[in-house]
Length: 120
Image (cartoon, rainbow, N blue to C red; front, side, top):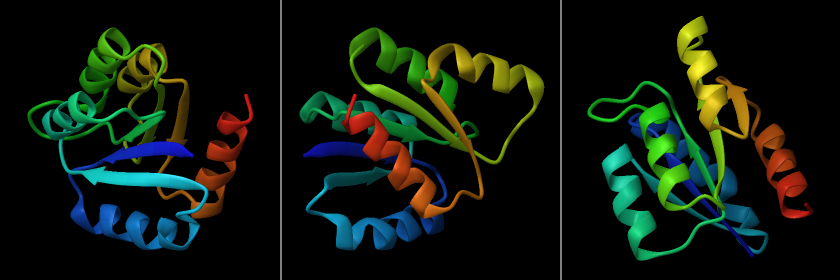
């Protein structure tokens, strides 16, 4: 089973993802946190295969989070899911993320990406 950690400071988005993945619990385990610091705490307590994060978050942005994850947990697949697309941030994100998806994103597109990752 694939374990996926979603990180976003938008609780409505996290709630929507939680609803969207609820019926697929046989395919993957999902967890949801609202900050980079909470993500690092969660990762220190249980292993995950994939981390999906927003870029713009208070305290620690998604690029900083993924840099830390790459350093501490290099085998985790790192994905950015963000509506923020300034060129400099996008370039920095591509340096630390395996995949970049724009918000809004269809739930099926995310699930399709996770299926591809799970077969590689």
